[in-house]
Image 1: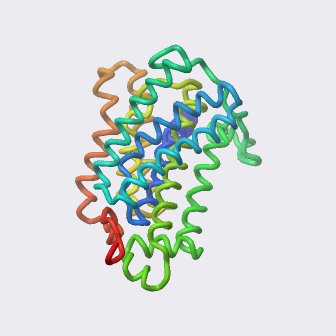
Image 2: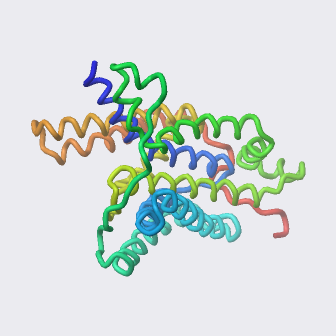
Length: 305
C-alpha cells in the first residue's frame, strides 16, 4: 500500500506542470487561438522563475515567471490576433525564440549557459486530517502549495468557463466570432485575454519545475511538457476535468518510467520514451473523435478591416 501511495504522490508531482499548462491552453483555444508556443512559455517561466527565486525568494520567482509568461503570450497574441499571422508558425517561432533567449540570459545573468544556482522552494504543507492516516501520508504531507493550487485551478477554470459571463463570452468568440461580434462581444480583446491567461498558466508551470521540482533552472528542463499539455487538453476534449485526468495519465506514466529507470532493468533511453509514446498513442486514438472549438486557429477580422 505504501509503494502505491508513493507512486501516486510521484505521479501527482509530475502531473502538475502538464495540468496547469493544459488548463491555460483551454483558455487560449476556447477563445479561438491555437497556442503551440506553450512549450516556450513554460521554458520562459522556468528560467525567470529561477532567477526571481534566487533574488526575491520563491514567491517573487513565481510572480516574475507568470509575468514573463504573459509577456511572451502577449507577443503571440499581437502576431496572431492583430496581424493574423498563421498561429502554428507563430507558436513554433515562440518556442525557438524562448529557447535562445533562455540561453542568452542564462549566460548573462548566471554566468552559465545551461544551469542556474540552486534556489529555495516554497515551504511544504500538510493536508489536515489526511496527514494522520498512515496510508495517505505520502500524498498528504510535505506537499508543494503549487500542487494544491493546480488542483484548485481545475475547479476554478470550470467555474469561470461555465458559470461566468467572461467564460461564456470567451467560448462564444471561439465557436462563432461573427455571431458573438454581432451581439456586441468584443472578439479581439477576448482572444487577447485567452492567450495571455494561457501564458500566465504556462509561466507558473515552468516556475514549478525550476523552483519546486529541481530547485534550479536547467536548459531544456521542460522536455516537451508544453506539447504533452496540448495533447492532454485534446484528450480531455478542451474541458478542465477531462484535462486533469489526461494530465494525470501522463504524470503516472512518467512516475512509472522513473521507477523502472531506478531498477536499471531496461535501458534509460527506452524508459524516458514512455510518456511521449503514450502521448502519440492517445492522440492517434482520440484526435479524430475530439471536437475542438469551431473557430480555433481561424483569424478573425470585421468586414472592411
